[in-house]
Length: 325
Image (cartoon, rainbow, N blue to C red; front, side):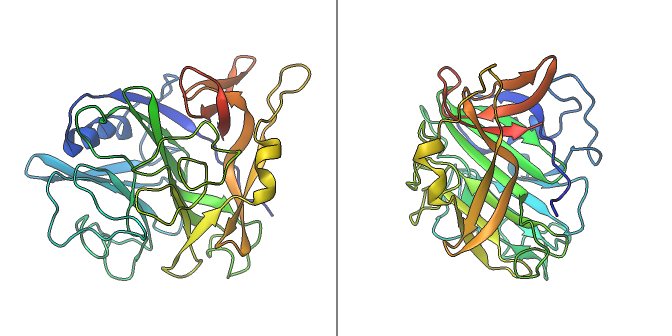
């Protein structure tokens, strides 16, 4: 039986031109702690879809932010960290990625206790399950610094989009992202969910062919074997093992461009994922295939926004997934 449907809400856009990881985290912080959504509705951390975020500063310099969802029984946390100089000890990375200074990194924790520090082997204490970090953004420097951040959230997941000079875009998606459509212990956590994350990668932008290709650079829910490539993964239920996720090959080129209906309506096709290339992982929760569109635009039915588009460009239509509202 399917899980309760998630509903994505768009918090907004934050802009910065500063070329430090701390400034990027501070730009994100302004979104993560917003008191209203983009549509003007009230955002109250800890209720509805609103996550509660905390900030770690070294002196007055922000080096990490971490979020707690408003609901759930798995003590989930999402942690984002970046720094100008590598800390000691080094942060715990998730293979095959390697740490980079001036880059933002993202990881997910289950069974979390109190936050200790972002570079601890277990940032949320003994007994927790920590993924390690993947690169969320590229390195921060002149000409390649993210200038825009977009933030979307549901009661159990978060989506972050960073844009470089308004044209090159990278995505992070983390949380209870998968409905396994089963409660078998080997396929689902005790709450019936699968937890994991996706990053476009530190070296890649979202590709215009992100659905018609399963190459490991810039495409949607693929997994590359080199540092900086696009990565997708999930916790093996009940363990700290993190397993690769991929899209099934039969859902690629032939249907990448979802066609509208004869009256112009946009179908929303479920997106299925495999784990480790050998078993079905489940359905990506309320993230669907949809006709081509532009990044950041909303899909509207009448006067109601029913979803938000993720694609490779804010100016030109390309292959698109929809964050269902």
